[in-house]
Length: 127
Image (cartoon, rainbow, N blue to C red; front, side, top):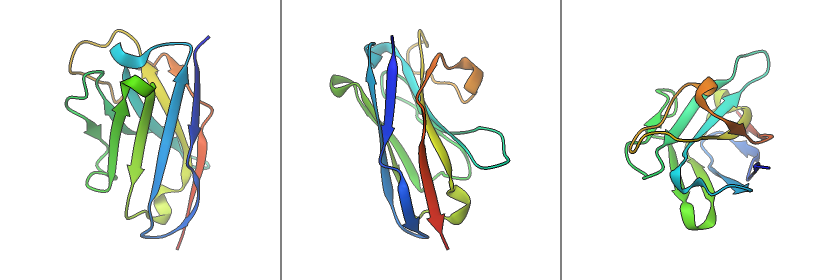
C-alpha cells in the first residue's frame, strides 16, 4: 500500500518561507511524476507544481511561479516544495501526489491524472 506523508506546514507571516516534504512509502517514486496541489476553504483543489521522474521541466501555477520550487530526491523517495515570499492567498491544505507511468520528462497539471495522494498539510499565512 502506497502512503504519502506530508510535513512542514504551519503558520507563517506574509513574506515568510516554508519547506514542505512528502515522504513516500510502499512504492519507489523514481519512475513517477510527482506533484503538489492545494485546496483553500470553499475552493476547489488546484495545481501548484509538478516534476517529471527525471527532474526535467517542472511546471508551476502562474500564482506561485518565481516563489515556489519543487524538487525531489529519488534516493530518499521524497518530494519537496520550497515556498518563499508567502502570501495570505497561499493559505490552504497542501497535498502531495504521484502519477505512475508518466512518460519521460513529462508531468501533469491535472489532479485526475494522479494515482495516489497524501493526507495534506495545512499552511496558513497571516497578513
